[in-house]
Structures are given as structure tokens and as C-alpha cells.
Length: 142
Image 1 (spheres, rainbow, N blue to C red):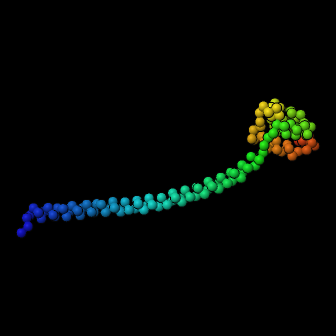
Image 2 (cartoon, rainbow, N blue to C red):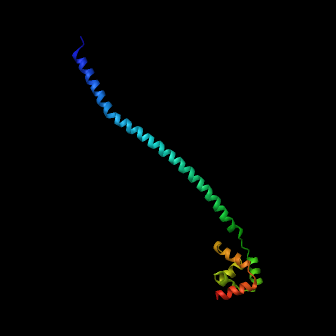
Image 3 (tube, rainbow, N blue to C red):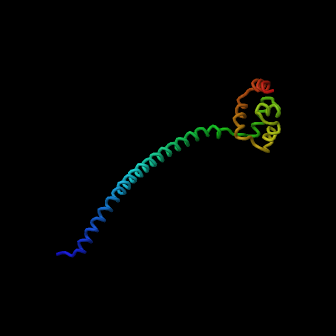
């Protein structure tokens, strides 16, 4: 016949395992649910990173296409001075057409400074003008 202490110990162990199993089952289910959620989030992150990478690539392409016209504009002091004389304008008149001061035009021609990048399109537009158009624009500005 088995010892009563031994039987009691086994019964207590069995009941404890059963209680622990009841409490941990909910935790196991929650952990599995969290793992599924984490896996879903990881897939979403990968998809978003792919999308971002593609958009950055597209943005770089459009930025380089947009930047090319700005880089095509260049400034040469001698050419600017020749242009001004060809149009028959003084430095002050040229400055009014470009929206800058006469001192700026003088400084550009003497190579003491160079025009800002934002002023290059206006200078390029001035290159395309003839004497009559420049005079007409000067009348509008004045």
C-alpha cells in the first residue's frame, strides 16, 4: 500500500499543474496574438520602406530634371557687359530691368561679385530681348 504522504504530494502537484495551466493558457494565446501582430507590422514596415525608397528615387529623378535648367544658366561678366552695350542701356537702366541696383550691375561687370542664382533667369530673359523690346520694358518699369 502506498504511503499517504506520497499520494497527497502527487495530488497537490496535479492540482497545481492544472491551476497553472488554466492561468497560462490565456497568456500563451495572448503571446501568439502579439507575435502575429508583430509579424504583420514588420510586413507593413517593409512595404512602407519599399514605397519610400521608390518615391525617393522618383523625387531624385524629378529634382535632377528640374535642376538641369538652373545649371544651364551661367554668367560671364564680359558677356553681360557686351549685352548691355548691344542693347544700348546704361548700368542703371539694366538694373531697373533686372530689379536690382545700379551698383550690383557695375559690380557684376567689373567681376567684384556675381549675380545670385535667383537673378540668372532674369538675365537670361534679357539676353533674348532686342533693343526695341528692352526700351519698351524699360518704359513699363519706369
